[in-house]
Amino acid sequence: MRRLALAASLALAACTVGPNYQRPATIVPAHYKALSGWVIAQPEAAINRGAWWSIFDDQTLDSLESQVVVSNQTIRADAAAYAQARALVDEARAGFYPTLSANAGVTRQSSGGGSVTASNGSQFSTAPLTTTDYTLEGSGAWDIDLWGSIRRQVESSVAAAQVSAADLANAELSEQAALASDYFQLRAADADEKLLRDTITAYRNTLTITENQYAAGTAARSDVLTAQVQLQNAESAAIGAEVARAEFEHAIAVLIGKPPADLTIPPGTLQADVPIVPPGLPSTLLERRPDIAAAERTMAEENALIGVQVAAFYPALDLSALFGYVGNPLGSLIRLSDRVWSLGAAATDPLFEGGARTAAVAAARAAYDESVANYRQTVLSAFQGVEDQLASLHILADQYRAQQAAVASATEAVTITLNEYEAGTVAYTSVVVAQATQLADQESLLTIQQSRLLASVSLIENLGGGWSASELPSPGSLQQSNPLLP
Image 1 (cartoon, rainbow, N blue to C red):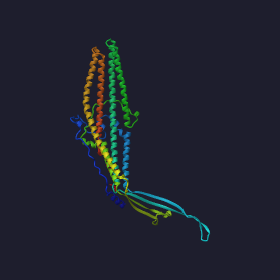
Image 2 (tube, helix red, strand yellow):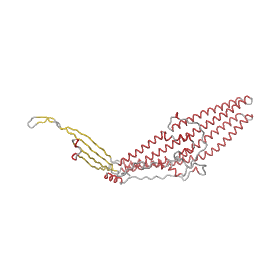
Image 3 (tube, helix red, strand yellow):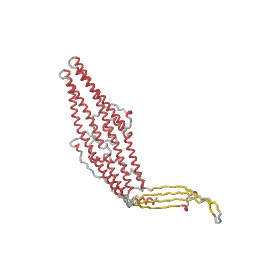
Image 4 (cartoon, rainbow, N blue to C red):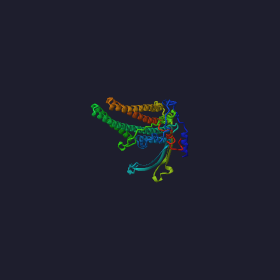
């Protein structure tokens, strides 16, 4: 055992060829452009790392979100991929150890026998010679990692496992954000349906007024028909709103791993408050987004693979050994006279391979360069996502206030126009126009509020949902401890 430990120490003390990984620089802005001149009113101080959606203070949403990680099949698939990546680390680390095998066998053979002629010319028969040999052997082989090929492969596998862990975190965040978005769109459909039901009630009252005016001879039959058409259109729109709600409810069911038939969400109101999370400094975004962490770890993975290919330029050293017994009979097999053993060492280095190794190194370097470009693009896209949602929240807040004023004016216009129609000073078409304008303005207000909530969810998602790169599994946790290994 001491000799094995000494040999392992000598092997691990050998050099490790190939470049050591250093994170490449990328462009990081000093501030977010969309925040210039904007002071966020009552921002949420921090995101709950375990349940970021709790800032919306909605118990139904909390209940649904808690089921995503447990039951979502997409997340389960990513979790299985992460488990596979961890197993591949163990598989790569197995290359540090010698391969041992045992062999036991029995061989029975016969030779000779037949007719034999004596010197006097007489013939006689001889029995065949039958022997039985028993074998009990143990053998071992060890690929000495002189140039760090195995170490680089383990390094690459560890980084790949970290990529998988970041992908899992990103999948969880993506599915959680998708559920929150679907939920707020469902609530917007609830609000739209309620608005249409209230509108139907108002249109029925207007129809009664036109019918009374027609009965009194102060309105034409066309006014009654126009009022009826307007009411029927509103009723049709209210039915159509149920379709959108059903689709969002079905989408939510799938996100929490349930058949759509097994989930019913009672109607509710669209949230009025829109929480805005401060984005912090742009530099912190590099450590807050799991997709950026995955792209960064991919660079480390590809960098280590360059070392694997570079090591192929150097001679490979293999050690082999055999020890055992071969003899007969079985009962006396393990004795010194039947002992066999061998020790061997072999060094191999291809003298000509047509440039295959050079091409393999070039391919590995190109794969690394590709991962660097992908990393930098991921970072740029992340900053774009944050800027987009900050700008959306700022602009939509101003638009929401303007639309609220428009709704108030449209509502007042309907009241005045309807009174004027009853007084006989305006035509019924003025009432129709005023009511249609009011409904359009009210629906626009709902759409803006829905967009604000969706932008809030998207901002949280683009900021990483409270995740941190420190949550990635460390190289040490991905490898079992062994005194013979680094």
